[in-house]
Image (cartoon, rainbow, N blue to C red; front, top):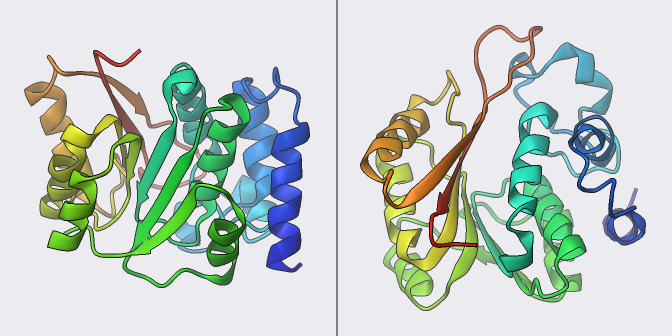
Length: 241
């Protein structure tokens, strides 16, 4: 399937979707995310029962557990009318970025800016998506660089999704650089046995920043997987409606 057709089909899906369905967690988990397609890397961390969706579906290769991400999407939707911009640090194939962007665009007509950041060159799908989508942009930049720091200091995002380098120091850097320039920070891999740094920092700020944020955890696992993987932590500024 060509990237042009993938993008066309994904946009049509979100345009035509029943507004009640897109806010239904069960539909998001068992239909939408699976139909868009899951990532097919690190399969030892993936549930066997979802194997038919690895590298399949509409081709987005979303690197998420549907039972985690669907609940996160519903919580995000509670604030969607006030979310006009989105930044994703570490976008890999672009699946999560495209899904989140289209989801927010579908429920907020004022959503206008979506930026993906990665040190890896964008693949064909991500390049085509940002080129064909108003307000969408890919920046090939290191989030630990002065260039990124300067960029953030001149741009505000309602939501920042942190999924770049997973070491404690880098996660802390990404969080501290963006903290004053966003309303919601989201951390990926908060309970991942393969990268403990994210969870260490996440648990730390839940204590040190409890006066600033309301915290939400989305950490459901699949019984067929040995170990604990992925996990999403969402910090919503208390002053944000």
